[in-house]
Image 1 (cartoon, rainbow, N blue to C red):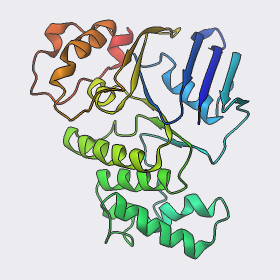
Image 2: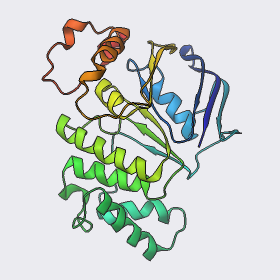
Image 3: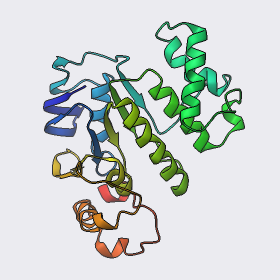
Length: 262
């Protein structure tokens, strides 16, 4: 799926959030949106999902204006939003059952996708019986089971500890290789953006404009991001974080907090 954001403006009453945003997201591309809290990143994501309307301009998916949600565009939040009274298998299968798929077939596919995220053997567990990382793996399986053309990720791993987050990033990248959706990722984790993205768009405080775009599509990446150190420093600088603040390399990632927007 190809997204086209054309002259996007967004205001909430007198609060201007996005100003003249123009970008195209190509088929199969993963683009990360990085910027201060409240600058409009999630709003753009929700526009692509069909959950938020523009104040001006248009968002197109494969050349057609987005008018509302569609099964081909899956949105995943930081909160896993699993139903506590359903098992992990039932939670994953529900994504297909909502589309009126055969219930037995949906359950079989749910087991297959849980296995893909290393949750084989946990199908009959309830969300409160597994860890936060396992719940988020379940949410990943649910997001991918319908093999969407576009995956819209709103801080999907933001609530996890650093090691669990990296493990989930690996799982996500493997699933993306298999399904090949177009991906828009909102993240406050600069290292996550560097590891996952083909392109990174760095936003200003609101009203959001793109300060700079970084292209990483030709890099073969691991969690050792030392080759991206100059780019990392530049991104942090654009976000108002001084180089001195990120000299302790033992920290696995740098997050942008509310204070950056101040």
